[in-house]
Every structure is written in C-alpha cells, then in structure tokens.
Image 1 (cartoon, helix red, strand yellow):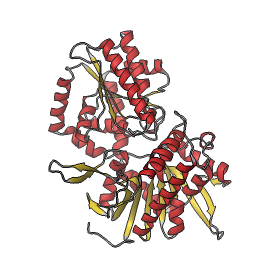
Image 2 (cartoon, rainbow, N blue to C red; image 1 turned 180 degrees about the horizontal axis):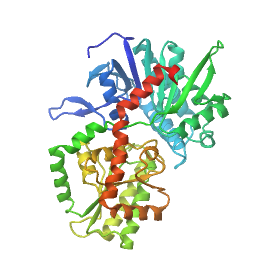
Image 3 (spheres, rainbow, N blue to C red; image 1 turned 120 degrees about the vertical axis):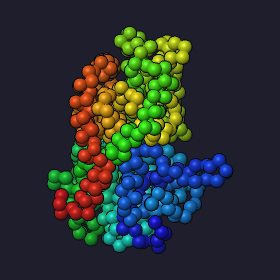
Image 4 (cartoon, rainbow, N blue to C red; image 1 turned 45 degrees about the vertical axis):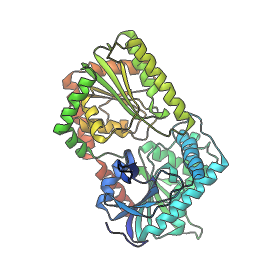
Amino acid sequence: MSPRPEGRYEFVVVANRLPVDRVEEPDGRSDWRQSPGGLVTALQPVMQQADGAWIGWTGAADEDLEPFDHSHMRLVPVRLSGDEVEKFYEGFSNGTLWPLYHDVIVPPTYHREWWDSYVTVNRRFAQAAAEQAAEGATVWVQDYQLQLVPAELRRLRPDLRIGFFNHIPFPPYEIFAQLPWRRQVIEGLLGADLLGFQRGQDASNFLRACRRAVGLTRRGHTIVVRDPQGRSRRVHARAFPISIDARALDRLARSEETRERVKALRSELGDPRLVVLGVDRLDYTKGIQHRLKAYGELLEDGRVDPSEVVLVQVATPSRERVEQYRLLRDEIELTVGRLNGDHSTIGLPAVHYLHHSYPREEMVALYQLADVLLVTSLRDGMNLVAKEYVASRYDERGVLVLSEFTGAADELTNALLVNPHDIQGVKDTIVRALQMPEREQARRMRTMRKRIIEYDVARWAREFLHALRHPEDE
C-alpha cells in the first residue's frame, strides 16, 4: 500500500491498540510484528482486503510516530502520555469499565481524573479518524476503551458511516447504573449508526440502558435519536458474534510441522495417557482459580490419576502493572505449587504452568495434543480460545468443557457446558470429558466445527459491514 494524503481512506478501523508490537532484532534494530489477541486475529484479514487505515496506540508511552505501512495495512499511531496510560488505560478502561462490564467480579474504582483522561483520549482518537477518513467513508470503532469516539466523530464528520463493536459483555442496567458517567457513555455510543455486541442479551442490556439512562425508547433493535437541530437518526443495536479464521487454523493443524510438534510435546510431558489444557489471558474473569480448585479436588479424591493425566495451563501475561493482576498471578502460582507439591512425582508434574505468550503454531499443536480443553470463564464476551480449539480438531477428537457465561456457549452448544461457580459440577464434567467415548466426541466436534467454519471471521466482518452500509436491510 502506498502512502496517501490525509482524508483519503474509504475504510478506517479505530482501536485502542495498533495491530503490531515493537520487537528488538538481534542486530539492535527494532521492527514490528503482528500482535497476538482476538481483535487483531479477527480484523487483519478484513483490513488486508480493504482499502483501509488502522488507528491505534503503539503500547508505549510518550511515543510520537508518523503513519506507516505493515502487512498491507496503513497504521496511524495515536500518542498517549505516561499520565494517560495510567489514567485512561490502566485506570478508567481497566480499573473502572472492565470490572463493571464483567459483572463486578472485582469492585470497579471510580475516579473523576480517570474519567477526564478517558474523555481527552477519546477525543484524540476521534480527531485522528476524522483526518484519515475520506468523504462518506466507513469507520469501525472497536471496544470499551473508545465508547465516546462515535459521538465525537459524528460531531466532527457527520458525513461518515460509523459502526461500533463491543468485544466484552455489556452489563445489565442494574450494574451499569453504578457508573457515575452512565449517560455520557450511552450518548457517546449513540453517535454510531450500528452497534454490535457478542450476544443478544448484551444488545438488549444496551437498549434498556438507553431507556433508563437517557430516556429513549426502542423499536425492536432500533433507537431513534435527535440531533441539536431536531433531525432524527436511527441507531441499530444487535448481536454479531465474533469468530476466527477457522480454515487457516484447520490447515495449520493438518501440517506435518504441527504433527511433529505434537509428538515432541507429548514426549516432553512424559507421554501421559490424557492431556487436559487451559489457555487464558491471566485475568480474574477467566476462572483459572475455579478450574485449579476443581482439578485439585479431583486429584485429592483419586478420580484423576496424575500418572496418567496431566493439566497444562497456559496463562498469557496481562496488565502486569495493575496490582490486581499481580496478586492474581501470585495466587495462581501458589496454587499450582501446592498441587505439584502434593501430587507430582519426580519428572512428572501434575500441573504444567506456563506464564508465556506463544505463537499460533505452538498453540495449534497444544490444541491438537489436548484431549480436553477447559474454558471456565466467570464472564466472557466470546472466548475465541474455545473456537480455536474446535477449528484445530480436524480429527474430530477432543472434548470442549465450556462455561455457560461465555458468548461462545450460545453457538457451541455441543460442548459440555458448566457453571464455573459449581465446583462439584465442574469436577463431574471434567471426569465425563475424560471418559467420553470417541464416537460421542466425533459427533459433538463435527457439529461445532460446521458452525465455526461456516460462520468465520470473514463472515462476521462482512455481515457487520453490510448492516452498517445498508441499514435499509435491517
């Protein structure tokens, strides 16, 4: 893609982060590589096919960079100061909104200076989008960090078609109402023409908040809003469950390199008869402690034999500057240490705990290795790990144990659904998964694979963008 003047891009994505991370090369030079994570995985194929620009933060404080090209995308960095990283990102986004939107699993914190920073940064992102978008362009704003961007962008550029997608849950109004700035957030979101959510319940929660916080009434999935001049505009809100590039994962799982890596991993684990896998970002919403408690009790009860079954827990580092996340890591590592101290033998840990990020190739090998995948989220907008596991199982083997509090549970109904708060129920379901006959595994996996291959990330983006650009079809 060749550089363009400002104001020439027909499609603009606005997200908190750019889809790349800076890496240091052995010769001392720095370069960019694609970031891990669901959002980047979901949108990169779309961006590569579109005439588009991606606006976001680099992840480093006080960094001023000019727009640049990477992986067939025009990337436009937005600068955040150290103070804004602390107040906008670590503060309001992850100390206020994240816990609030995840059913207050931990208590949110409300600080007016955090809110002020959130407003300032959202205006900066909106200004960057206004400068990059061509006349009548489509702008797609992503996630909870940027909920004020749609209204600010509409004020700057009323000619644009503006979409917003919320990747995390939208809470019931009784929870959302705790937010001191609830009206401002709803008004910010209503700047969009189309609001997408992971689940139908999330869209309903938002529409209810429009009535309770702003006094607007709904007609089906539609809210009618009026601008200061009295002109009316229709805002649509409904579910567009995000997905993955399932075919790409299927191809990777079938490769000779993956098959060889699976053999090596099994040998490194001591050639266990069965492998149980957990893959999560290290976050209190993921229910890792509940999973370890259930698994530990199974070891204590003798229902799982550590000489035959091993648990591999991958916990990707996350928000390590935030105190709650540091405490969570300490708690999990203490639990793993206790379980291994009680149940391991020399050379055969009961739990392999891996606090690293891994490339996609390694993750697919782990998915292929795992006889059971445990997803025990206490609250999750979607959980793409569950879908990645299913996409990787071209052999139609393996069992997915899936929390009913994930968006994925609405689609992957042939998983074994669990309430992660019900430790006994989780224990019984793990045992059922370990003992499931291959014929039942194949039947369940075949149905789930059909769903995610048909409804992949390309279809997700295509359906959202069609609905955004053609509201008359709604």
